[in-house]
Image (cartoon, rainbow, N blue to C red):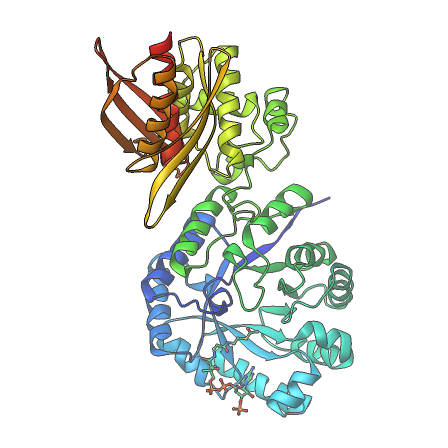
Length: 506
Ligand SMILES: CC(=O)SCCNC(=O)CCNC(=O)[C@H](O)C(C)(C)COP(=O)(O)OP(=O)(O)OC[C@H]1O[C@@H](n2cnc3c(N)ncnc32)[C@H](O)[C@@H]1OP(=O)(O)O
């Protein structure tokens, strides 16, 4: 079976910009247009609606100027209105060559918005197309609200298509303007039309109001559509349009008899650029381009990746210029940690790996985000413990309140014997140390003096999970440092103190 080429028309700069609150500047539009055509290699781009504003006029002018020099002018399209040539003049002055003429694809819209009869509308359109032709402008035609037209005024839609068959129109564009179609209707409607007009090029334009934008687009292609309108990150009015990334991936993976020019590898870069320019953040779970979609979190999945890539699918991140990652947190297992260690070029023996895994799970339990960059600190914190653990801090309460002295109750075990003490201090940690001093007095031991106390976020660790406290102690015989690492500053100091207690009792 011969393969069919499907045109991809990107409308991020027109329909995508209709996302509430989004307005691209002229230079942003030019940058996005270049990336779309040169890197993502979509077949066509729709860059603006005519007449909108002076800024929009400038934006179109900049793009057409560049497109003319780069031989892309016939791929750059402007949405126009049936307005006695006002839109056509606007786009000609802005240097554009292809109009996407917005007409009414449902009787309802025609009757109530334009207040015209079908014959009046067709006559206006005929005049518009012929004016465009006389000025060297190519015409594609939108049948706005076509999906509802097919449901409620099918006779009108076919009358319209019959009229268009005699017109010099390059493409007929069928929008599901309100995103109301189901996948099966998308298939049926497009098939019905394509069967009747097999030689006409039909674009299908879907919206995501029911989250069916991609499914509908795919069914449209199966039914015979020749082109699709998509937007980067699914931007667009209301719930947006069918997103470029997932639609392309589905076409490539599930429609073997279809070819497209779009280059998957460029998707992520374009998506991030549009995210930055639009200010509309890509949801972390957005297929293909979201931050989390190539991150394995569960330990079992990371383990399976080590064993014959059991949790891989065709949707490999490298296709899209991305990399698989392994999250660190409470659902991590040894395999997640190993994968991250490999990336850092570190190796641990089984015992150390177990201890580090346990520590990451503890941190994860506190809802902390642990990153790959935190790992070296966690490792040195855990592996610091080269002594026999004779002292354990079991429990403590630290209080801090306005007008009252901070106080602590602490319970510790020293070589199997439990002690509990209460003390006040100048701060929470001071109170904690005073309680410890009381306990160790009972053991006839004097604790070393605290001579320096430094707190920092570990350098290079770019998560907010960790806080490192390094305490310098001085006893009669020596000066030494201990460090503690935790998400909480006081807890990290207590961990450093527990290490000191173990050093002096060993
Ligand atoms: C499917 C889509 O997403 S279509 C998106 C179309 N793009 C836009 O709307 C771009 C943003 N719009 C605008 O900047 C403005 O609306 C403009 C410049 C186009 C027009 O502005 P205004 O002249 O102020 O009119 P307004 O915004 O109220 O638009 C409604 C008018 O357009 C008419 N209209 C609606 N569809 C069409 C059409 N396809 N062709 C011609 N006129 C149309 C309406 O009948 C109405 O006319 P009326 O005032 O005589 O009743």
